[in-house]
Image 1: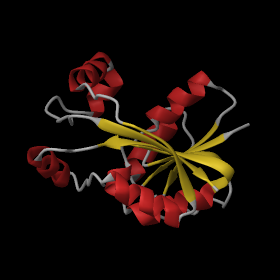
Image 2: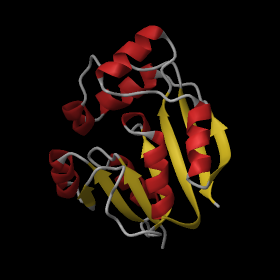
Image 3: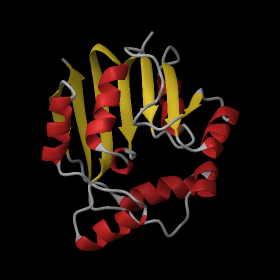
Amino acid sequence: VSTVVDMGCGIGEMGRLLQKCDETLNVFNVTNSPRQCEIATQLGSHCVVADFHVTGLPSGIAQYVMFNESFGYGNPKQLLQEAARLLSDGGWVVLRDFSPRTPLEQVHAASWDYKGYPMHEVIAAAAQAKLALLWVKRPKFSYAHFKQFFQSSAKMQKWHSDDCQGYGDSYLTVLVKV
């Protein structure tokens, strides 16, 4: 049985999707919002209200720690130190986040208290946490596809407004505990 810790889980959608694909997964959803955790729990997720810089979860609990569109809300050094602490030996950090590129995208992201960190900062913070880079990919991010997904889901429409902005691309980074 593998354990995944979803750092900054929102209402736990990604964790539930992963469990739908593999029912043996044990997923801990971490959010700093009591309301999000309440909703996640009502939807069947195991949720913990905590600062994702210091979760309070046991050391070595997870084979995977993921940040799905949440990394930019935190401090890279502290987040990756906590992720490394949570991982068992050989465990992976999977980081998928926005990468605001234009000044307008950066201003909009800042209005959310979000920061898109340059990859060299992420890699340096990972090295300090004794995490090695395995892979980085910058897939094209289609906001039209993302918005279509949200509009097709009544649950997601409830939590996301039509006027939210998308970014030109995103990045996916995989790190391993060494």
